[in-house]
Every structure is written in structure tokens, then in C-alpha cells.
Amino acid sequence: MTDSRNRRAAQAADLRQQRGTPEATVARLPVYLRALTVLAEQGVATASSEQLAAAAGVNSAKLRKDLSYLGSYGTRGVGYDVEYLRYQISREIGLTQDWSVVIVGIGNLGQALANYAGFTTRGFRIAALVDTDPELVGSEIGVHTIENMADLEQLIERHQVSIGVITTPAAEAQNVADRLVRAGVTSILNFAPSVINVPEGVQVRKVDLSIELQILAYHEQRKATVDGAEVPPAMTDPTSKVVEAS
Amino acid sequence: MTDSRNRRAAQAADLRQQRGTPEATVARLPVYLRALTVLAEQGVATASSEQLAAAAGVNSAKLRKDLSYLGSYGTRGVGYDVEYLRYQISREIGLTQDWSVVIVGIGNLGQALANYAGFTTRGFRIAALVDTDPELVGSEIGVHTIENMADLEQLIERHQVSIGVITTPAAEAQNVADRLVRAGVTSILNFAPSVINVPEGVQVRKVDLSIELQILAYHEQRKATVDGAEVPPAMTDPTSKVVEAS
DNA sequence: TCGATTTTGTTCTCGCGTTCACAAAATCCT
DNA sequence: AGGATTTTGTGAACGCGAGAACAAAATCGA
Image: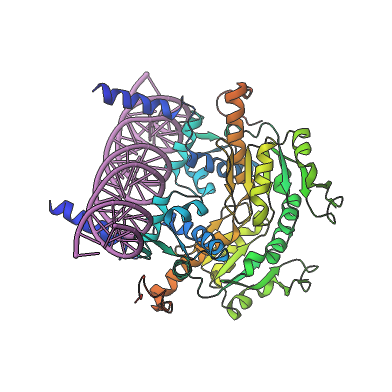
């Protein structure tokens, strides 16, 4: 009785006051933001949860619940004011201020990211491009000059960088991450195909092309084997006892 | 009674026989595979779930449960044979055969992906690079020649492409996806910053740089506001009605 | 002014995924 | 040979997120 009352109270507190927006919701806010931007460009002033959800590719109940974590920004019977909601989400995400980003490793991918338009759009600013290769250091990409990896710490301090993007080979990713963290970076976006360890309180997100492809391959194979019933061959005797690796 | 017996039986069936590997597990298999490859290169023949989990950056119980969906490939008291497990996971994912991939949109990102080494590694083969820009068509990237978008369908058929990678601007992504699907592609990896709709049975995975950055920004802001207690300003009168936000 | 209609915000239920904890198997040591 | 030790495989509990469903608010029309 007291129990159920407490639980209900805790749940209600969770929902709004206790500053706890679920991770799953946070991950969708940028999607809603983009959908709203598209609608705004089309001149739409007000949108229902149904319309918004369709534009964002999600269920409308889920969208409403997600938005309810930010506050009551809709109007019953009417919908959401596009501009207003857009601003509120921007504010919640933290795009009302600029974040300085450093890109470490200016290979193919690093260059592509440096040129990526979506990067420079409101909210993020490339503070520096960094590489170890003496051939690259000093050359220019767009408006940026590639800086020397030796100066990483200074650059981070000077430009107040809080977000680091790692586009180095896998072997160097951990080392780069360590240096970023030591220099004060507290969020890392890792494109290198390796797991990196960071201290508590540092956010890491990972983007891995080959993992994505492999997940797709898994489903492809499932389709193929269900249809054609082609079963992959077993490995030649799983080692006599357990080992004697090939 | 009969109910609970049925449920228990169903659960047991789920676990191994009913060919149902949970999505969350599937998404981690590539990570385990990479960890195993690293261990193999270091000459490690056998690894415990604890070691493997550390290398993959996950909890050991989770790893054991994940692997149990594939079968009993470990030895109690000993651990897992690295080469054997590596093969089993490869087989489960579907890397014992090659998958043909087409990349549509050869801008900065498309070029970077085309050159990406991890792409060509075992399991995936770039069948074609495609773009609409007449300036690009015919030029070469590595061993590949950029082909005309008009020939997309023919290329897909000729090379038996089952996986499409979209690296076009957002505005064209849906159109490209439609054409890919109509031509027989059943898996899509979408780098364009837009939601794409596909029919049932077609797998889509989305990689979005700016969404990742925004998620990081959210957490950065949370850290900043918790520490410094800096509260973002409210919007100037959010439309006459709706509110008058505090 | 009052009922009908629309659409949000929220409660409730269900299922999935994570984690704990332990029994079952395999090895090692005496 | 047999007990001690290691480590897997899995049953069970738990927490989070998804979705259905509905009550509360706001508008509209008569």
C-alpha cells in the first residue's frame, strides 16, 4: 500500500522532474529535430504527433511519450507548434550553444568528415584537424589547416574542445583516446574499429562500418537459408579435444 | 501448470533450437569476432569468457549468454578455443561467403568508404560505385571505375548485389532506396541524414554522424549544467497561446 | 453555453535484454 | 581415484522500453 504509493510517486517523479530522460529517448530527439526542420522549411506551422511520428519514422505513442519527458509542449486537440518544439528540443540537446570538435586522423574518412556539411551546421565547430603524418601536417582542407599531433593537448586547451572524433587506424585509437581524455575531452566519437576504454564520466559512441555490414549480412544469410535451405558446412573436426590450433 | 510447462519449454526452445538469436546479440557478434581476431594474431589459442569479454568491452555473463545462442562451443573449466569460436561466429554471421555491395553516391564519404580497407576484408566485395555526376562517372577509385546511376539496376543484377550503401544527399536517399529495392537489394546501409521507407523484409541500418554528435552534446550539456548550474535561456514568447514558458 | 471532436499526456501491461547466481562439466593435484 | 578448482551454460529476477488504451484538455459548432 505505502509501497504502491511510493512506487507511483517515484514513477511520476521520473517522468519529468527528476531530470532523467531515458537514453532511448535522447537518441531519438535528434531525429525529431530533423523532422521538425524539414516541416519548418515546408512552411508547416503546427504538426500533430501523428504527422511528426510519420516524418521521423516512429510510432506516434512513442513520440508523445518522448516529448513528454521534455515538458508539456503540445496543445491538446491541436498538436505541436513546429518552431517552438524545435527550439525546445534544440535546447534540451544542447544545440543552443556551440561545441568545439577535434578530428584526429585525417585519412580518407577524416577528410570526408572534415568536409561534411552537416558537421559545420549549427551546434558544432571544427576546432582542429590533427594527424601524425608530416606529409599531411600543414596542408589544408577547406578552411582548416592540418595540425601536428604533437600539439594535440595545446589545441584542445586553446579551443576549449570537449568532443573528440577518432578516425585513426585501430592500433592507435586507444592511445589517442587516452591523450584526448587527459587533455580534458569528455566525449568521444570513435570511428576506429576497436574498443576503447575510458574513465567513468567520459562518453563514448562508436560508429563502425564493418559491424553494420556484418549485421546486415547476418540477416541476408537468414533469408537465404530459410528460402534455399542451404546449410553452411561444419568446420573440419572441432580440434581433437579442444585445441592444437590450426 | 500446463501453462508454466509450456512456457518453460518455449523458453528452452528459444534459446537454441528455434533459430532465434536476439537482435542485441547479433549486433555484438561482430565485436566478439574482432576481439577473437586480435587474440588469434597474438597467438592466443584459448580464452575464457572473462578475457574475451574484457577484449570486447562487455560483461562476461552477457558474452556467455550470447555465445550460448550459437551452441555450446566452450569447454567448462577451460574456456573457448579461439580459432574454432572465430569460425563459428563467422559462420553464424554469414562471412563464410562473400556479399556484393554497391555504393551509391561517390562524394567525400562514398570515396572514403570505397577506399576503406575494412570493406574489402573477407566477407564483402564492392561490386560497383555509382553516381549521377557526369564529371565523376568514368573516373577511377582504387581498382573501381565509377559507373552511371542510370545503369544501377543492370549492375545490381549482373553482380548479384544484395547490399546497398547510400551515401547521397538526403534529398535523394528515398529515391535511391526505392530503386535499390526494386532491383532486388534486400539490405541497405544508409549514411544519408534522412529516414527512408522500405517494404517489409528489407533490412535498413542507419549511420548518422550528426545524430551521434548531438547525443554526445546532450550529455556534455548535462555535465555542464550539473556542475556550473548554467541554465539555458527560455525562448522569447513561444507563440501567443500554448505557454509563456518560465 | 454546452455537447461533439480532436489530440495530447499518462497509466498500464507486456516483452526483451541484462545481470546474478549456481549447478554441471571438465581439469588438476595429491 | 577422488576431492578441489576452474569455468561454462542457464534458470530466475529485475529493470527498461514499446505500445495500447484512455482520461484530460483544448477547440469548434450549434
